Image 1 (spheres, rainbow, N blue to C red):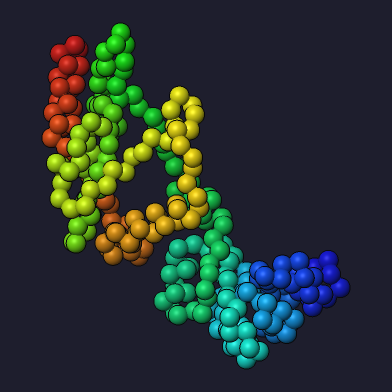
Image 2 (spheres, rainbow, N blue to C red; image 1 turned 90 degrees about the vertical axis):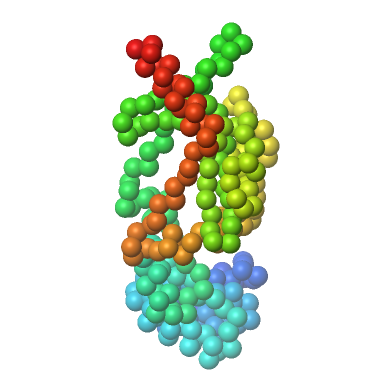
Length: 248
């Protein structure tokens, strides 16, 4: 908006980012902005962004404008207070949108603004001895001992087992076994380098692909994934419970 015209703004942006020209076209007139972007950037146009208005109608109109001007390679990016429900609605209508930009609803959990996370003591080391500890209050009970969570991938889905850290996961379930917990911090320092964004993205996609379709539904709410407890850990729970009941 600091430029004398939208054309000048687009030309300046394309000059600075010749290999990554994605132009915001809804500042004045979205369809005219799409036409200007196509004429100015041409084959350098990587995409255009829509940040307001009726995204379904506008994306269809913009796709037509871009294709008519030979910019079939240009992608359409949509943003503007999007969340999973709005995206789902657009996808159901086959909106020609290639990428969605989610900001506020990703950084700030709108439906549950408080995300609780609490550390609980599970074992105590003193005098060379390790004592397992657990909390048994209703609704806030914990499992004693250092844990590992094993995930089992089968043809009919996945299942998780919470076990003690020294247990062998292959003895606790059926399917391809993967330990989910990895040590990355110890005594306040990293024990290994952090993963790249690409590695994290691939891991998340793999995890989502492993879930049943029911677990990904939005309209009916998410399906809770439950984890069973290994027999050894269950036995330890009762041992600790008995000790504290006896001490009381």
